Image 1 (cartoon, rainbow, N blue to C red):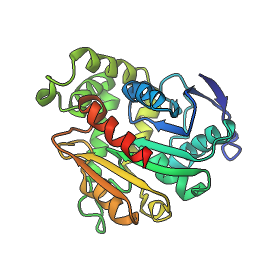
Image 2 (image 1 turned 30 degrees about the vertical axis):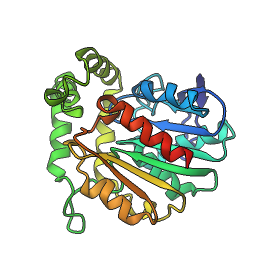
Image 3 (image 1 turned 180 degrees about the vertical axis):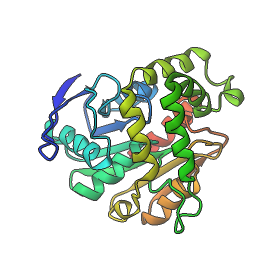
Image 4 (image 1 turned 90 degrees about the vertical axis):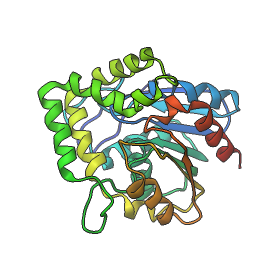
Length: 278
């Protein structure tokens, strides 16, 4: 574990990104969702390392233990941060695993840097390729929804995070699968993020069209999505992504909410490891 300094010459800005690097073998990079940090991958890291993989996770700029700059919360910049990690660690044959907002970094990384250093991609509950409702994306989320998110955060960020955290895992229907302590832990992580980053990332994951990026994917790809996800709708994301990416796999996890890594942990881990071993 440690920090690396990004090489954002375009922004004339250099920030420190926190990352953890465990195990040996083929590298698997875990990219977390909004508004959490790499700590959300606790129940995947151990499984991956014990299965013989080198597991790397990092905190997105503005979140977790990474620096919290005022701006730079667009997918081009965040994909460059990911590229810096791959270059810093001299990684090849990499598997990228993006959860929710993290799927945006996966898509934009391929769009900007190609697949030369990659072997496989996994999108879990991902926002990719396009969340926003438009004339040519009718199943998407109305722009007003994202504006309501931002308004609520500006009024009372912690209140929003408390309510969103419950929606994230559909807590009322999954109390038997996840304890209130984990819910509180997730809240603590989210509350510790940069308020500015929390706001700006809404436009990134809510309004960035990644359909063109996903068309450039030419390596084995898996989409995992719960059919009870009431945060990120499946049709404009995983279902559409699976249609765009040729020969990709699309697995629907029955009764799983958005935060399936917490509620359906064993199932998600098995699906992930089975895909990696192919």
